[in-house]
Length: 167
Image 1 (cartoon, rainbow, N blue to C red):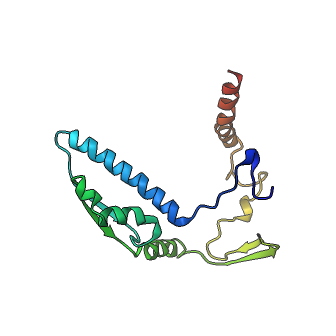
Image 2: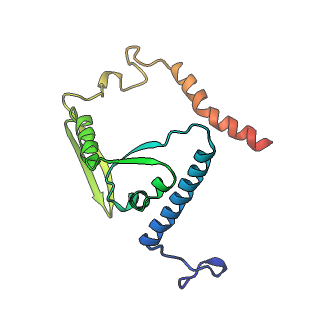
Image 3: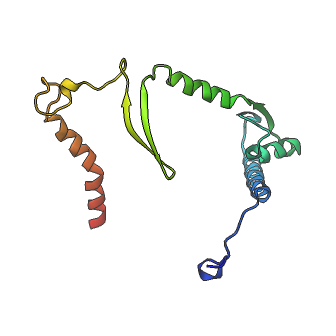
């Protein structure tokens, strides 16, 4: 379309600086609105404690600027911003812990940017049991009547959507 979208509107590339400034403006408007309502209230708490992960990142720029330029103080708010830059380390520790009991091998096929799982095996922690892998002779592990409730519950959203469509 030669840089133009329908109706003559050009595709715009948003500069990260201006996106941050727009976010700062929105934050300031909210802070001013909060300040106006807080001033009109009888007994509002003015102490606010915020915990952020990585205060120096671009994501928190509006918050940092509002704090450093004194906008919160101007509105009568005592804002304390606690920076926890180790958020990524905590998340990695959580992920590592969830994988503590994972073992075995996974075979992957890579083709033109696509990853397909072609096989997996775990000798010690597999939930697969060949003796109940069939619906025929599974020794009573699976009751066919259990599927009825699941099917009715899963179809509930479809029945509701159909009812709304008929209105």
